[in-house]
Length: 470
Ligand code: FAD
Ligand code: MLT
Ligand code: ZN
Picture 1 (cartoon, protein in one colour):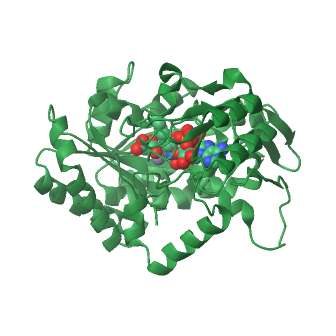
Picture 2 (cartoon, rainbow, N blue to C red):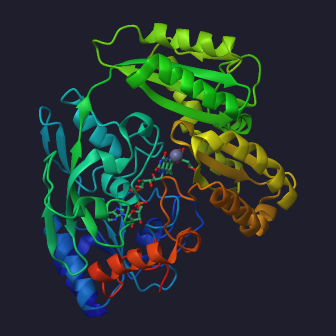
Picture 3 (tube, rainbow, N blue to C red):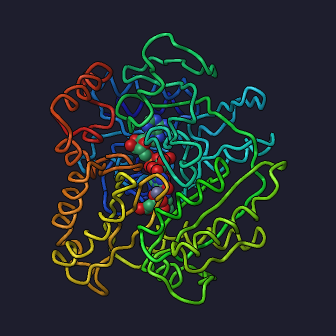
């Protein structure tokens, strides 16, 4: 153990090997506070060469390794277990934007660059990196790639895997795979880049990426819309698609419970509509400087929706300040749920046609399991993705914790029955590895295990994350 620590110190410098409990504390607890582990050390390499030396030292001493970016993951995949045997490898010092080519539409970055800085690097050359998450001020592009993150721009631009062209990865034996190619076309065998996207640190450490950037969309038309039901929200999606076509960039849902928590806990938050509603949609159209008429399109689609009984009222943003106020009602929900108290997260996708019936049926089932439980339902309804999160009955956090297993089982069973997915965008981590395996076929689990064995035969890369121990 002393030998390993000495090797790590000589690889990255004494200051970047943390072992004091106070220094290590922030790296061993996840954002939700439900996963609290211990680490042999936290190592903070500053280059790909240093990452490779750390990984090699861990491989040669059979030491488990947990890659970590911004530690904003919601399924406990970026923190170690309680054994204290693992090294946490933080990419936080690798923050260089290596190259930008606006004509080719590529941006090449270190894995530790924070998502907001990736967006800013694209904006600096009048381009757009569209990925947008509530955590974008702290999550890293390496973590986004490792989790195949989603967010609010998936409707128009796709998940993270659609935004990447090439990767640089340190493999579990310490070799570096340089796949940093920005080619749009490259049919030369298995797609290794995509293999690492969504692998949650279990197949290697992503150290760099070539990302796709897009024409900037400086024009926006944004509305917060009261809708009577989830079914109406889905109809409104169809109306918005017909009117706005490719300009439809965001279509998010939130229930009244979610808005109430934002109004209670987010400083300055104001309900933009007079009459309360059970459900709301945040809809946004985005276009280039040459795209006029977005406001008129938004108004026309809302008028059609009201006439068809699919919307009751809407607040349209009249400027950037109003736009960000409407966005904060949506982006603030995760944070205020935490402030409110114990939360149980469920990140599900369903076929869009079944969303309304599924949501309507779920409420009574959960009330039977835990009377008074509060569904705080919101998310990326345009992608069929609901954050079917639960808060405890008021003042009864312990009851939610006690009923968590039963509530989760009820939701997972209902998702499986509707041919949905129990993890739309957050990944499996430690929270859902076992549950996901139970819903996959033996063939699928065998294939996943075969890939893991082929790349990481000693099982040292993020053990028990994504796949449980065989
Ligand atoms: P971490 O939390 O550090 O790690 C996540 C996983 O990736 C772990 O398994 C870790 O081992 C692995 N990993 C990290 N870096 C690397 C690397 N360089 N190489 C290999 N493996 C690595 N997620 C969404 O998809 N959509 C949302 O809308 C969304 N909203 C959020 C809002 C809030 C307020 C919060 C707190 C989280 C939200 N998330 C969302 C979840 C989270 O931000 C994403 O999963 C994000 O991609 C994690 O990035 P990170 O850098 O924090 O990764
Ligand atoms: C979001 O979309 O805000 C997050 O992915 C949801 C969550 O924190 O549960
Ligand atoms: Zn989300």
